Image (cartoon, rainbow, N blue to C red; front, side):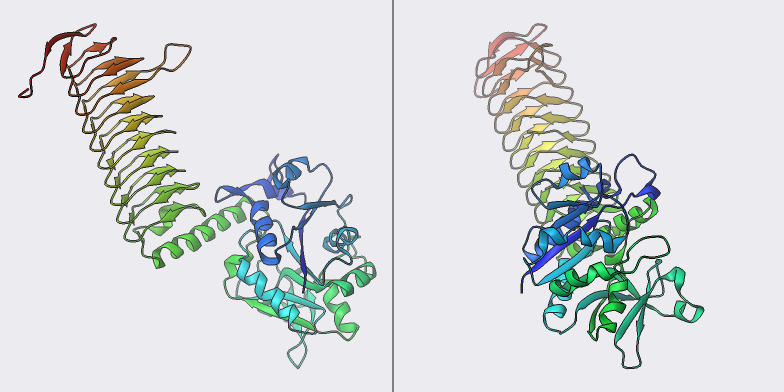
Length: 450
């Protein structure tokens, strides 16, 4: 059967106390609505239909090319919101999956279970339910003596006896499309003047139809974000989910409660992640690494057996057996090849450090190419910016750059060359030469024994 996805995103979100729409708030590096869009696509294999309110251009911009848009001009309840999708979807699918843009943690597998339950039953509606001691304000699921679902009672309308029910409505449904479109106009208006999708359950039963239910095992999936307190709960639940996944895959996370791993991060087995480490974006870390503590690594590729301590890395590449830190900073375009050592308080930007390079502490290497086995002394700086544009520095293999050297780009230091401590190098240095002074001058050629 063909199943279409309808995502409800027209709510005002006033309880967030924000200038931004609720569904644009961040969770794990993505806006809430992105999680719902991804789930809708993957569960059905089709472009979702996104129901938005008026003046939602910011939502349109985020969801552009990811959904078909329909507008709910007046916010008259969830049933009214789904009605707006009728003109786009009627006659184009067998089933309609309805989800909310503020429930970002619903798993694809759960939605597929719901769709399958609808496909395999004669039910007019299949819905997700939760059994828990924490009602979260959800409506209660009402069963008859045969155990069949016959209705939903909202918490505010429930009797004392009904409030004792521990099975709750998760607000996620899969409908028979033809029955849904035919019966939506029959929804009664509430005392608030709104039309509620939950009333479709009683309508289905009254018409002699069945209602199927799928119980959700993990109540974290059903966290709805209406306040920033809920958003924090969703962050914590997402992190538990991600961290558990990696620990079961062979990664050691010393303190999961204080380790933050993004949904697109990839980790190798036997890697150890120490507390207060943040792994973000499309970061990839190999096997048998030791990362942290207190490190931020974003959109960076790290090879096997690397050691990163209390450092920040953004858009960098580290090959195998690299160690950096504490307090190293790798910026975009930094490429540390195999076996590089980078000391504390060093910074590298848009530069390649060749295999075996040793970079001392409190140094800055920017817009440079550094050859194999070069030693960069403490306090070395590539002076790459002249106030208008950046210039390149090249250091040949096995060169020894003395502590406190200033390399004024554009400049080239030859292979096996040495710069004396405190030198200001403004001119190219020939291979196997020793330069010293301010400005640095060649004082002698080096013999093999040197």
